[in-house]
Image (cartoon, rainbow, N blue to C red; front, side):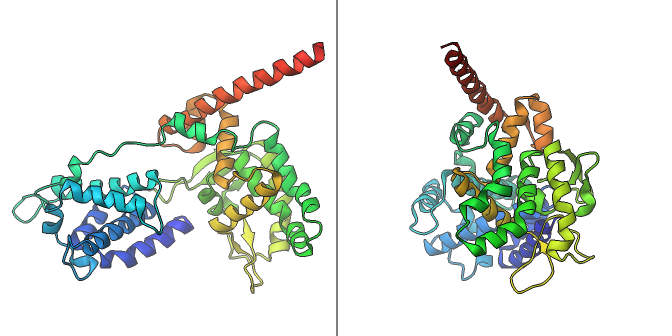
Length: 366
């Protein structure tokens, strides 16, 4: 099991007793099909919804676990519309359109289970009336739209190599007046360049990077064994190939893993950091890697670049040389629909490359 999954499973176990019994039953029903991380998000969404019901007087429950099925049955379309409005306009923690749709989808999934699948002792549905069946939830972020949002915010062509080189060498020149930053960079530059190179040359998600162990790595065959997102088989790791540039970066980082990060024999993680006040290296966190990439990206002149956009950068570059099915497998997408983003991005990339080539040829002829 991945580190994050283990943490989320513990948190899920802690939160479920606070929920109504029928939510606990629904989560148990979904547990074989969905990851603990996804189910934890479901529970958090239900927590938000039930708290809103109580605040609006639509439930008289003294605690979350006391919200009744009868109170859910009595909800009307205008109530759900009011909740959607609350999610989009509340003064603190306003949600994006995508997040609102996710929260409503989580509700619809539970209401469907209660009205169509779960039964009481007399074989009648637990929920006799399902208001969420009347709510239209429009899908957002079609591949073409997502591609348009990514334009200009990912690395293209020579930038992939330039960014890794900047992490390793160029950053030091930009922070030369800051001794603390220079020291930290000198210590971590090979690790940081290796992480960026691995994502830019394999397309791994940041969650997959932090879960990598030394034993998952086969440098000679340019191969990793990865716990893929969404996989419920926690004993199987998917083989994922990486390109030569990542192999070179790994060969530079690996000798430093033990010497620079005081790795104990019991620490299995591939990428380590030494927490403040401690002497031994520990597995890097997702937040640490995200902050690290943002730090370099801003100095590199790509302020919109994030760790996930490194994955998009790889995918766009990879798709230029492979078909949609190979790209889907390399990225670990559940369907080619998600991979279509890169078809739209590469259309733009190819047309821009042709325009650049035409301008270069025109200059030479002149």
